[in-house]
Length: 247
Ligand SMILES: [Zn+2]
Ligand SMILES: [Zn+2]
Image (cartoon, rainbow, N blue to C red):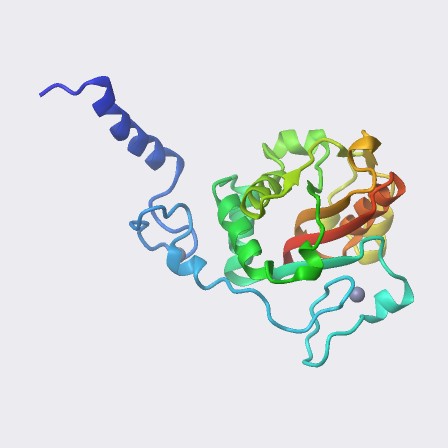
């Protein structure tokens, strides 16, 4: 029997999939056999849940203790440039492993799964979504993007925009100074390090807009704060933040 070109295509697609995606879950090592399973198995993904503790009504920082929603001490001292921020969950366990696989092992396919989780977990928060006109991903400096191969926040923003039916604006907020990575710095150093690193290239595109700023991980909030301040100074009406996880 000879296979026509058409017959080869599915076989080639399967081969390509095996080449690009491991056939075992990169977290629990189970065989990936269910339809649509890629890189991380459904059983691991199902263990990722939104974090349910109370959080600051401004910066979105999760509180350890139970109690009524309120502002955290830092936001009472000085309100951030963004009006509201929410993280889907905590940066730990399977969610952290999945973000690391996505970001550093370049499994871009996980971007869609993460965006879907974030949307499912936060879609009921009207304060976050009400009146949002556009999603803007936190940009990477071009040199960093080249080294990493892709901007993890941009891919997430595209996926989230598609799911939530909101347009995204790319290459308007840009990182024009390649500052050292924030990961090794203290909160105070992070704030100083990131200052002046971003700029808005085309102010008309964001003028009077209500923007949802997206990043993968929220640590001290210095990046979201600096990007929001730059967007507000450039004429944005309001900036809210959304992140996958909070460290
Ligand atoms: Zn697994
Ligand atoms: Zn706060």
